[in-house]
Length: 149
Image 1: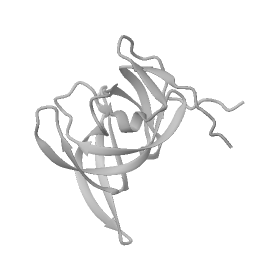
Image 2: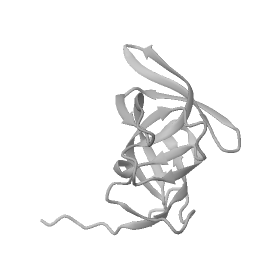
Image 3: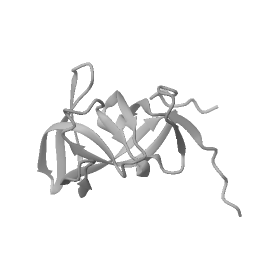
Image 4: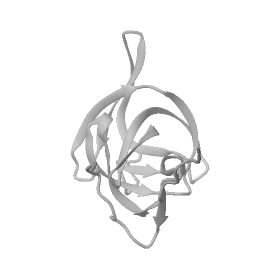
């Protein structure tokens, strides 16, 4: 049986997204096809053990200067090469991205993006084959889940 082909959806170069597993209802993300993975601006990153499982707790600063303290099981560490060539070892979590009414499991690295303009960066692995990026537009989508009819 042939696999059902999904229609690709268009997103702009920046979008409102949500991370429901982390209780982040809305954050502005830059869609960056030059980046491999997704990352979020996180502070006070701490690895803790709960019932034998490693968790990472951290704070997410949103653009309106509100802070969301959250935690998730630590999935591991990734070596990330930044645009200036520096290599950094970052913790990452597996979480759900909600963009354009679609939920998708992604790997999200945690790092201090303080000097950057956007709280979150979505790279090509998180985009997968589901979305195409129109760099001429922004805010085409919503962070809300689509109603199933």
